[in-house]
Length: 442
Ligand SMILES: *[C@@H]1O[C@H](CO)[C@@H](O)[C@H](O)[C@H]1NC(C)=O
Ligand SMILES: *[C@@H]1O[C@H](CO)[C@@H](O)[C@H](O)[C@H]1NC(C)=O
Ligand SMILES: *[C@@H]1O[C@H](CO)[C@@H](O)[C@H](O)[C@H]1NC(C)=O
Ligand SMILES: *[C@@H]1O[C@H](CO)[C@@H](O)[C@H](O)[C@H]1NC(C)=O
Ligand SMILES: *[C@@H]1O[C@H](CO)[C@@H](O)[C@H](O)[C@H]1NC(C)=O
Image (tube, rainbow, N blue to C red):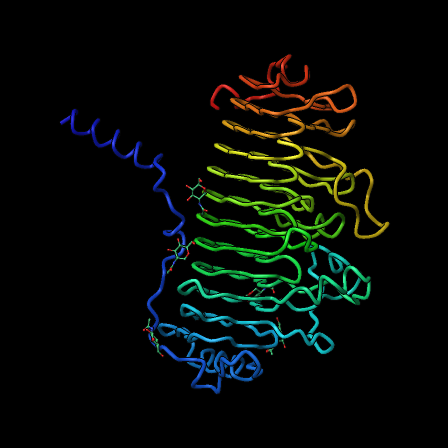
């Protein structure tokens, strides 16, 4: 009997630790009661006809049918040009193979929406923001999926407005979900977002899996996935190549984020690959509501600015704690690891310079890099040193250390290092006792 029990425990433990772990049981996939096609609402997939009315009427119909089993909105093969539209609860937006939902490039009557309370203003410009191309506010039980159809933001017109400084408001995200729960985004391609790609904010129970997110490396602020003041977010098995951070966990901006006080917590990122001139896996820089319990593992980064980046600023406040990054491969990066307290700027001059962020408990383990120019830059704040920074089994090849640009540069940091090459700064290797409480469990 005991033998069986031990066997059972062993099997259970090893399967729980195996690579097969997925997010899929956080939010169960739904079979819907109704199935309607966009064409039944006048949708035309010729790439030229504007389908705004078809989308809005189909979704209005889904809203009328309500929660009883929900409805699948089927997008057949074809290219469906449209203005922005809102999702509703209990729906599946399903893109057939070869289905493309394409954003109009007519921007003068693009709808506006209020600033997020945790940002106090648009991220780029004061005031409201252009509504995301696909938008959900207060929705529950929404699946956005298919057989790898495409959601195309046609962002170049917006990138050019940014470059020419002719934007009036903050650019639209490709897909933003505000105050929403039980969301699955899977088996889709997201192309050329005007701004951030996927932005769940004030959400819980969000799964993103088997997605491909693409935008040119020179496209401004095209972050891949930004979980923002959200909890229970799971991102896996995805490829992201964009012009800004691949995944950046956020929680609001300076005095607005502090006042709103909504953290991001319990975020899992696994089996994600990609490339960007900015950061691969990031926390920040907007972290004023706090960020805790983040696990990123099995990440492959190619030609990336910074591999792993924790970033915050004076005036942010917020606590960043219990962040674990495991099993990362980096091939080509300016910096392997950066943890810094002077990144990101302020919404206005009303931020409180005494609102210092607290960074405590960052574990980075089993990282291998080749063609990494600088191993790490870890810069805490003089009045708020970063603590519990634990590095173990970190190995970067190709580092070109010099007096001006040492292979590791640290200040105002306490932590520990174990099997790190090149050998990091003394702040980590002197192993201040107690400053790295979880280190023995790494
Ligand atoms: C929904 O309807 C479309 C045709 O309009 C069909 O091709 C598709 O297989 C249906 N999907 C489901 C899940 O029933
Ligand atoms: C979409 O939802 C927003 C609220 O989030 C609302 O202001 C707007 O009128 C809605 N647009 C349409 C077309 O229903
Ligand atoms: C969030 O959405 C729910 C409906 O799901 C609504 O009752 C609530 O008022 C919304 N909260 C905010 C702050 O908009
Ligand atoms: C969609 O693409 C992903 C990743 O490229 C792949 O793993 C998945 O099998 C594809 N799904 C379908 C339904 O074709
Ligand atoms: C990520 O890269 C690894 C190693 O090359 C590969 O095995 C895996 O299939 C890739 N996954 C995705 C989602 O691109």
